[in-house]
Length: 90
Image (cartoon, rainbow, N blue to C red; front, side, top):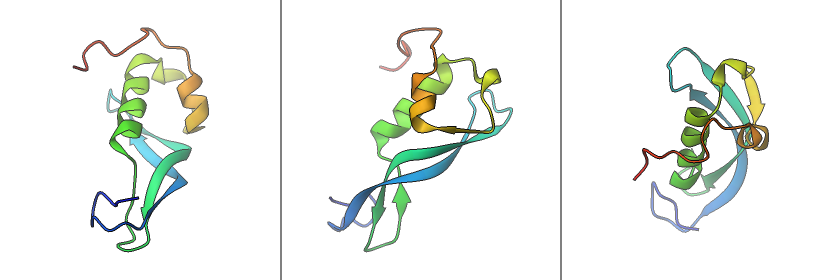
């Protein structure tokens, strides 16, 4: 796959741990087993824009006060939402 940073075709899908600040800014959480990309050419590790949007939307739509310091990506995405969609994303 093409790397978003160096544009070489050496990016591969990986599973990684990321740290995300909650929308209210009170703290950050660890999200394990998050889909990501790693480039063998430039060494960059990153998340695709689609994954970033999914995480940000989910954190806006759930009760983040009940989240532990660490959660897996799949567990986070399964959390019950207040609203079905982020109606503010156009």
